[in-house]
Length: 467
Image (cartoon, rainbow, N blue to C red; front, side, top):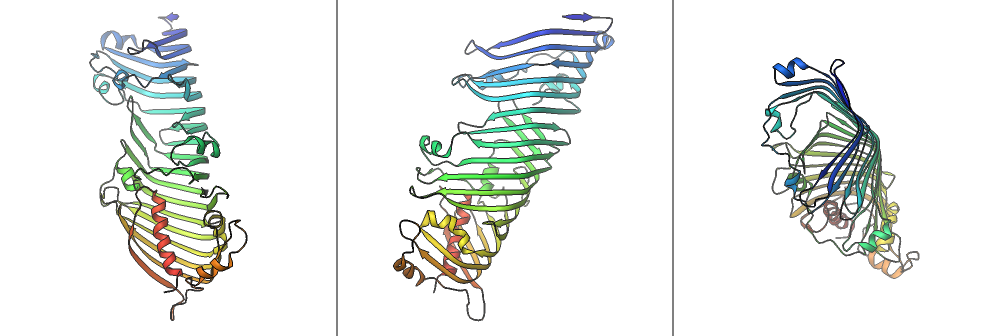
């Protein structure tokens, strides 16, 4: 320790602090640092005003390690609020330089979190007996937080990583974002009991304006941003339908938001230049079927559980479906509506049917031919059932049934199918075929997107069949 009353500083070198848990009697947290310095203490305030006023506090090269144990009750992590606070503390600058932090699961000895080369600054900190009882026990004017690398284990299957990211009061940026399933597709299918998506998600950067994050000792209480922008993302999702179905009830988006155990307030979300690919494997002897959305751009307004009715969440999408067909869609709902009412509208142009064959051939052993010149659909529904209004203009449409090898045409079955399929959409003097179907029952064990798909499928089949 170096102490100078005249030069007004105190420094401690090569310090290690350990915390031993009451339940396990093992180390639950440790931190070591090269140097802790406190500079320019106001002696007058300390002696006569019951105030500790410090100009700078700096911690150099801290290495923190946390050992998470499920058997430890959450209340052990709570800060004691019965301590009597006798002095006010003011710190103009609090700096952590070149910090490292890791968290481990004590039962499996696996890494939960790894933070490298971090820099953290708080400015104009104020602490007293009134701030002590709040969620965050002190006030501050400004902050900044940067790190070189972050690894976070989301759960037993997915990991999240980022690099060279920074958080500031006005604008924050997460760079080189990665969310990936840690197992290969085939390995995941072999270890899960029920079907589960395999994820490979990347984004160049995520920008957050006015980002606000509040966390209690053991839970998140608020995540907020006035504008969130995601640049140049690639989303690949794979599902093996040969694995047992997950028969749990799947909530709609409105219910998901409504039932979050923390406040979420993302006023505007912009997704710029994304590419999305969904693969679904239905037959063991075939490749997975593929659906793609390229040049995907979207804007989401009011993605939140803090707004009151009649404010709605509105999602607007502009993309190319199957790499060629322009698609526009609008999706809106009120989080506070207990019936989960929603409205989904979409419009697609110049969809070549044979571009759907990457999905229909491996999964349904059927090849499509023809063109859907223009398609309009409106789906209105709730958590129980939906209604679809479907309008389509098409020509030269044909369904080709394939043999088991997935290549050769099954001539007999193809003829049977096309006895019921209209070749074009001409309907009297109109070139459009318009249909309406009500009471489309939702399968609550399936996803939100399955609900949109089965509603669309009902309208499409009715429009393509000969009445």
